[in-house]
Length: 65
Image 1: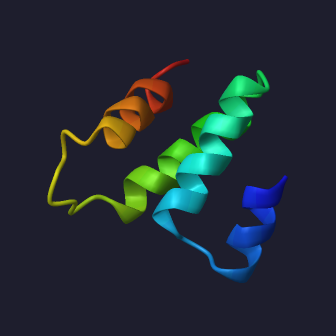
Image 2: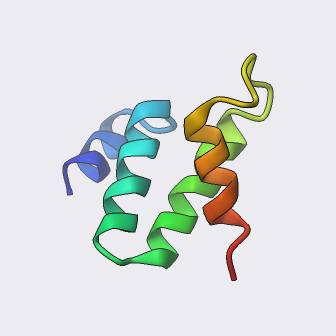
């Protein structure tokens, strides 16, 4: 996956984590999507816009069991 390659070179990038999470979600890999969304939420814990669409989506997937 391209996003994973980017994350290896440049870890903890917002858009790369979001892209990897959404790609995994679309591919049906819920565990991987959850992992990337959780990582995204960790780096955005002090986000200026907590209601940002990407973070709302991340919280929704991260809470799924």
